[in-house]
Length: 252
Figure (tube, rainbow, N blue to C red):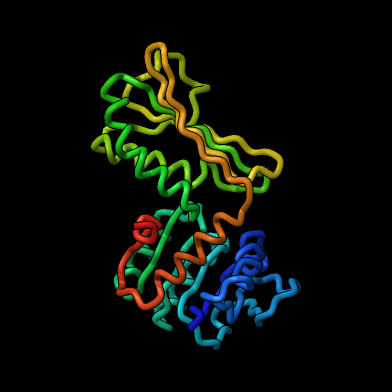
């Protein structure tokens, strides 16, 4: 039986990608969408406000804006619905609200839904301690389309957190060196953001040592990789106990 999904942010770029992918996937069925823009052609009813949605579902996939996060969590708790939370740029207060909600419902939160990025994080946690111990400096450069509002990307921060965690959280993050005139400290991770064109998402993790450099890159050529990941996460999350989950749980 197909997993029934409410798609929050259904009229946005990623919402439309997920809708298109779901139509070709027998494992899922989008039964309702939520979006202030309701003019898009969809095979399911679209509500402007999530509180207006009275259609039963198994999971919510959220590709909306941060402003609606509290209402989303309230609705999910009220209806005991698991949430695949793909929206980035959440504030500390909103993240705390998400954590509180996970005590009552299953929440899968990921800054990036792609299989490649989440596999990459496993690799980074293994090689970062080796290269850092050898004196390699660590830099992350991320590139996204001109419409992306948050910077650095949630994925870049997640990659930095993954590396830092493997280094006992002993490194600080630096986003701008324009006002500094000093030698680069060893225990920092530089994170740079590029915005332009229609780049879906590029991430380079650079380990720069003496006379050699190791660069690990991920290139997203289409938003479909994020949509497919979200759908896999929704199938995984159906029926799960309350708690916080990640894509690492999906790809085990």
